Amino acid sequence: MAEAADKPLRLAIGQMCSGDSHEVNIDTVTALAANAAGQGAQVLALPEVAGLMNANRKVAQTQVVEAARDPYVDACQALAAQHGIWIHTGSTPVLGPDGRFLNHATLIDATGAIRAEYDKVHLFDVQIEGQAPIGESKRYAPGEASVLAETPWGGFGMTICYDLRFPYLYRALGQAGARVIFIPSAFTVATGRAHWEVLLRARAIETGAFVIAAAQSGTHADGRETYGHSLAVDPWGRVLADVGEGAPKLALVDLDLTLVDKARAQIPALATGRDVPLRRV
Image 1 (spheres, rainbow, N blue to C red):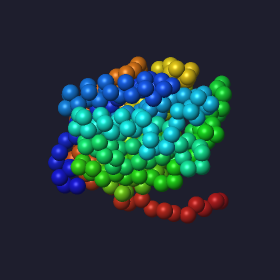
Image 2 (image 1 turned 90 degrees about the horizontal axis):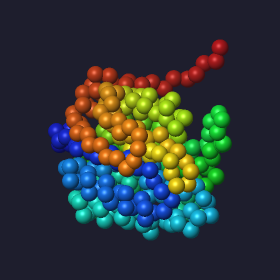
Image 3 (image 1 turned 120 degrees about the vertical axis):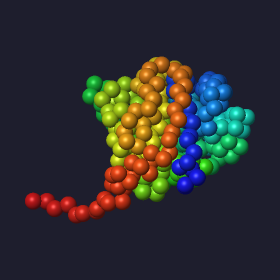
Image 4 (image 1 turned 90 degrees about the vertical axis):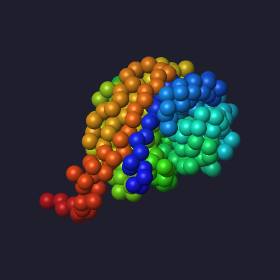
């Protein structure tokens, strides 16, 4: 960990407007990876459903396969090895053991090897005023565990989109030693305008970690609209990068990992929390 703290991390955030086929999205990620590597990035972070965004259930069932056979993950492994860069794939739908999809994230190292995998734990089942209900659990099964990946820069926490609203998940990752927490997302426009930045900054402040939130942006082939504004936030809650709207786009940030220890030393909330009973009066 001391070695990691002494080395800055150059990270690229890729913002996308993913389409309804693996092929079109692989083309986009191929260009983003080349651009990121060309600017000296050591890690490329991609958004939720970067590999495939297709609301047509019948068609999606013909496209989605097990993670070990997924064409998007395979392509990201090849790109990581080609460019010598770590890739956080954001997520892509893969086939789970019960026949439902999993919203699946993969962390790939600079040799192309898979270092960690995470399935989205909290599914987006909501009713936003004025909009049709959104029920992610109709198609997806939830993941069963949080994931902390050990890397040359320290612990990387893996979460996805709606997980953002469950702070206990981030507290656990922070207490386990996460220095960087990924929150790839495809936020709706309504919730993005109201909640996106404030929630991301809160998670960074609470954990004393860097938060990296690559996002989808724009109107997608399947008709959905997403908010954009991919963000990088430092452990003090300062926004280091806001990619704005539109895609594809790339932003580079240099993370001073010593800020994690400094923030946690000044406000040791991860170490001093107490579990107390609730008293109803």
